[in-house]
Amino acid sequence: MAVVTPVVPPTRRNVELVLLIFAIAVAASAYAIVGLAVQGAVPQDWWLVGGGLALLVLSVHVVLRWRATYADPVMLPIATVLNGLGLVMIHRLDLAHHFNNSTSLATRQLVWSAIGIACAIAVIVFVRDHRALARYTYTAMIAGFVLLLLPLLPGIGREVRGARIWIGLGPLTFQPGELAKILLALFFAGYLVTARDSLSLVGRKVLGLQLPRGRDLGPILVAWLASLGVLVFESDLGTSLLFFGLFVAMLYVATERISWIVIGLLLFAAGAFLAWTLFAHVQVRVSIWLHPFDPANVATAYQPIQGWYGMASGGLLGTGLGQGRPDLVPFAQSDFIVAAIGEELGVAGLFALLVLYGMLVERGLRTAVGVRDGFGKLLAAGLAFSIALQVFVVVGGVTRLIPLTGLTAPFLAYGGSSLVSNWIIVALLLRISDSARRPPESVPSVAEEMAQAVAA
Image (cartoon, rainbow, N blue to C red; front, side, top):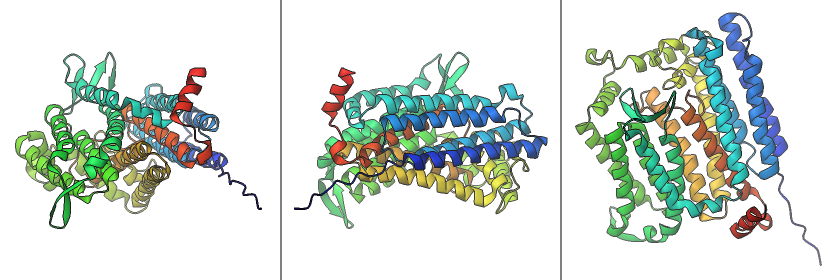
């Protein structure tokens, strides 16, 4: 009788290493090109940025070889090249504003990159099995809502450009909503994996759609009211949209009921109309979106108009790195970094950027399909969708597809809060992908993982 030898899938860590070297080379080369174009010489801190980025991401690679051998080999290189291109464009804007290299925003962003990557390494090392996170479902819910409410506290809450989404601790400021979205995704995954059977039950059939029972509408109504609360009290349209969209998407993944999507869209439309009717800052953003060249909107629409003119001057192939004027756009390093990239790299560069984001989301969704437990499926899908929705909202706002919301492009835009949270998201996806790609007989149970942790 023939003996069947089990096939052990390749880990693909060497593939990851090759892609990482290529990603580091792209970022370092672009950084040098910017210096040559603007100053006629390679920047003095070229070795610091290129070498620092290489050291950081190669450390993650080593940790993956140690702790998550079967993790997805493409996610880390994509995150690296996006982070690197963000450093390049922030450095480009530093030079345009004549910042001193010792205190440049690019150097600060590299420090935040180090903090974010250190958090990612901690997640990979200490979260041995993503299924153990399900135990903290309601703890994550409480922590997530506390983080969302922190900017409302007197003394530490900070209002920046009309939105109260920051907290200040001495000279440091942080946006707690970025970490809250991870905790809320964890809560949604833990809650929906236990409640999806009841949420999948159908009620009446209306216009060809099987609607849920009335008593099952509670969760989506609570999420809708909570997102409106964020919009009302913090004037944060972006986080409100991300929070509600994340819940509806994960609800659909859990139940596979199109009716939840329809109900979510109807509630979103009702909430958007209510916000437009009641809140002045929403009316201003909609007015800028619909009538940007109206004389009444000259002052408030200056930023998006400058961004559109910049992208138009870039054309198909762009003006070239260091050859445009992205510094004419206010806050180009954060809110409008996509417009800066569109100006200097053109439509082709923006398309390549969107392909990278699309690949990162696709690998996250592939992880959700491949992992064997319901909690992991929902968590991976939620984290992947949070990136997709954020990119859609950012790029849609910059290109006038939708009104501006205030969210920032993942990994690209200047800001420590967003960078740290997105590296944590990648780390969680890598941890889940390790379980998804690992041979079934080698995947330990949660009890075995806990026993190993106690023994260690």
